[in-house]
Length: 301
Image (cartoon, rainbow, N blue to C red; front, side, top):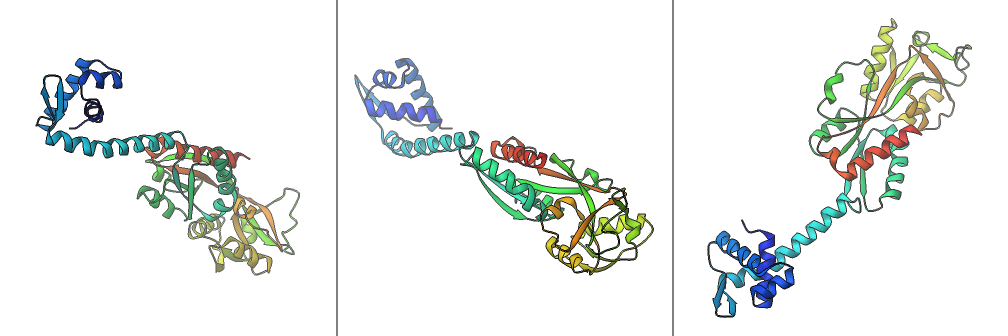
């Protein structure tokens, strides 16, 4: 193995012409220079210097190694500077994947704060719902995944191999047309999901759709789903037009303007847990750690 410190000594010896002069340049003793040169020659298996009295010159192998040493040491210096910049958050990149309502609510605040604090850190954003986003994280296609899971749902152990940063608990609310009989609810301010059993339903993403059916069936009915769309503004628009009712996470409602529709608290209370996920090794990367921190701060506001 050729060590970088030995290459630096060889370059100094070649430039100054002696061990003692090289030692003065490098800030070490003449015996230390001699010892490192012997170690380098042992590593490459051939003489690098010809010593004749007080004169010293490079062998052909020595000349070749000095010629390559310049590029090697320059590349190593550049690598050290780049790593130091990443470690000091003066540079670096984070690939973030988020579900749509997280992209429009938590992510903008978090990334704006991250850019203000660390302008050299670049973050890219791609949208995907869990479990696809979690698969992307495990396969190395992203560094942080903003994901969710419903309280009490099966598969709670599916993130056990990941670092999960809890962000918030997002309550589901009912969305009804503003002229609906339940738009102005009783003093309790909440409606039982069974009160909507006879209504036509607009369902959201596949994971949310499955949760809706499960909650409705636990209340004794199966929802009649007339429309299904992953687009939250479309859900709100369909409800606002009087075409049905829906159940959406509060975070999703905050990401759109519910024209013609009203939100109503729902009983029993159903929540989804919003978390930021990353791999254990990635959690130690400064830019990833800073991104997780800013997502947590955005969620706390």
